[in-house]
Image (cartoon, rainbow, N blue to C red; front, side):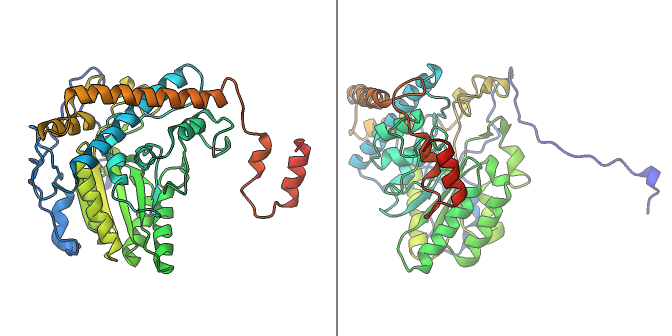
Length: 413
């Protein structure tokens, strides 16, 4: 035993991103397998035999715009054209709402720039009645489900057309009919809720599955681990999605990942099969999501799916990313732009063209502008019709308790 004065003082290690503002972005440490390189296991493969899939990246589209490998071929050209339009619509919607926030028409907004493929493609693997438990960056689930843009905008404006009646932050959408559970700003809580919902579906002998959504940063929350315990123990019919967009607000993903090689690998400690997917590859997202959803439907239990992507915009309209990462970092991201990649593939197979793309951009822009005018005619943060303050007392209790009745009366309602 060494003497106390001979020992080195204890210390902690604080992970640091490779590059800070002013530096040169470098993603050379990110190993990106060739498209088609990652094997596709059988739906019922034992999780112990597929641990390798948590460390590669499932990719379908190669750099020449070809769809290759065992994960290719799950979608028809028509379905892919729809997917391209969904992503383009989400990006156009984002652009209009960002400007609206800067104009003071809403207090807050969060973009999906660079992440459109994750939610837009995953929505297409779900059946009617399945339920998403999303974060605030999965509006593509609604867009791809055909949810009206006007209703989404009314929620952002908190006007009289807002289905949440002004009781949620902007972009905290909710639609039971479209399988979109109410968003919680306290991230990670929805992971436990998703597993519980999936367990309830199984208890009732239903056929509906759940999809949980979380960002890389929130996997450090205790709710994330509790959800995996219950999902693993009871083999809940749920897909446990992790969107690794590299940044948790201003904190790089290494802080939350800890000593784990990847976020997907965290599933191994719970005996849950895990996939790691190119989140900017629409075809790969769909194929991996369909595999995981089918596993849940066959009573084979949960799957952890990590989507490797990049948050090209700021965390929100309240954030300036130039304060913690190089301005040109998004341009250096090696997995590219999801819209351009799918567009290139459709052109390569003769199912799209530059002319059709320009026309589609114009049509989508017109649709979004018309929806915005309709929503703003109802009201914005600055003017127009707003929900009544009495709505804050509704939809909480089946029978309103006396103290709330009294408060509502004191408020003049």
